[in-house]
Amino acid sequence: MSILTSLKKGMSVGINNFEIKEGETTPPNRYNSGTIILAMENAGKLIEDEELREQIKGAGIGTSATRAGIIEKLERIKYIDINKKTQIITPTGKGEAIYDIVSKSIPDMLNPDLTASWEKGLDLVAKKEIEPDIFMGKLEKYIRSKIDKLVVKY
Image (cartoon, rainbow, N blue to C red; front, side):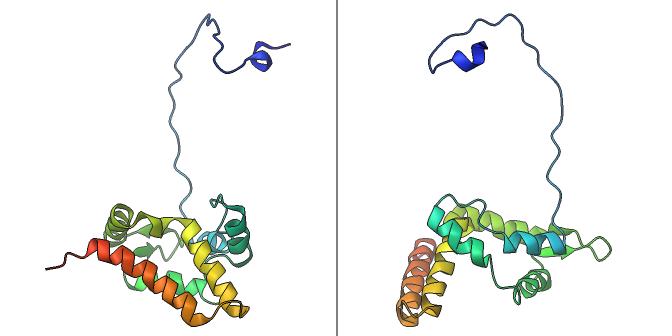
């Protein structure tokens, strides 16, 4: 039996030798206009809550009809640049600044669980299990609570 299979938490192991291996990691490939749409369709892999993961797994972010429009808008408002030849997407300085501001001020807005819960709410509205006004009221209350923490009142 190998020593590794018999190890238990808290046990000590003698070490005969060790070495440091020099190396470099490579960043993940950049998204292009096709891979970003696939990522939007398959959003949810990072969601731990099983119910929410299932919710977004079926829908993804946006709809197949709106995903390209979302990307076009991000480019139009200069949050991203798309290389015309390679279709590689890179954030602009403005896009990176927006990300930094949101990550420091309202980090839950970057959490895929939040997107999934909103998709779930929209699905409940579509199935007529919740009134649109009730869902929008909850959404508005949530957004106002986040914005109220950011706005300095005089």
